[in-house]
Length: 424
Image 1: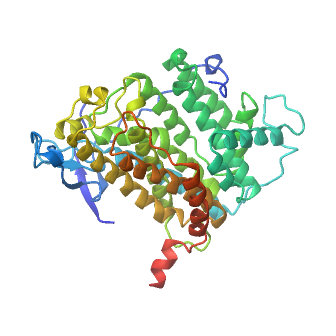
Image 2: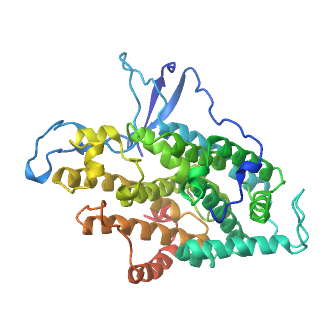
Image 3: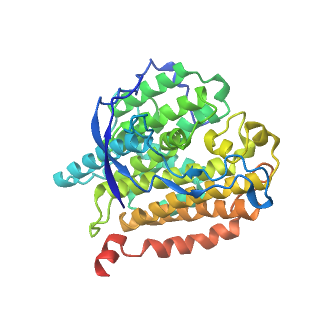
């Protein structure tokens, strides 16, 4: 991956959920960027050729010849200096912190204990076997809402399997705050309280049994609170933001609501002891998978959003499309051309993720491979529907899901990419 250094100028100005409104207010996540520094910029976060807004039929070519940003990019001031730290760099800073935490744990050589019955979180009246019951309930929820992923977790060791269930359930509860049956009643203050509840959970003071499972998990694995806080920030975005100016903004949103899951999960899934990959590269691949999955969700659900448009406004305009075109839901050649570029971008993130999945602990790879293969097939289904994601929901049928499972299992047995590269 090509890397360059850029001098940065000084910056300018539901059923699963217990009520978070019972908790006290949380804290802001925002911090000012440094005044001036050098930063790493990945050259792959540039452009993929030109986008012809006329499409195949030769419709009006407004904006023809301009390039379409594929990943996030740096804003440039009139003097030619990078004036704003890109979303990619902000998120990469988080990746570096998570990787450093995991490396410290590996150096300490303190594997997680598997004894559950005698450990009880503070300030929560639980029966002697309460933690075991809490983890079992997390597993039941995972099985109900993510059957394929749940099946893959059964190959993991017991402590890793339970930990992944606990993380999944917290993420689902958080998501349902803004997308569940009680979403109309959720306010920013309620999310602040949910964040305070998260902080208590990390301090060993869970509110309920499902929280207790996660509280126990973070005491056993080197899991940092930042990705969890960032996911809550993504929920705040859903309350206050219905449009995204460019992909840089959308990238940050995708990180908040999905990329964070990868950062939460890597410490639990573990890195293969024989892997030669850097810890940072494995975290980056996990992040890429979350971004890819969320971009796929966005493309699949275009016709189902309630007044929100999770598509880059500048790229829509470049393609000769408007919000009205989205709400009218008519498939045109302009729309097809636009969707081809969006799908190409999502696939690039999936390709990046693939390299990292092979570096995970072998017992943890199957559910990740299954998720990757099945989500990527949704993009194929959008194409098969002639890019009609307005009135046709792209989904992978049961037959294709079943066929994907042995393929995913076979891929989980392959050597890590870092070893294969060394052998060639």
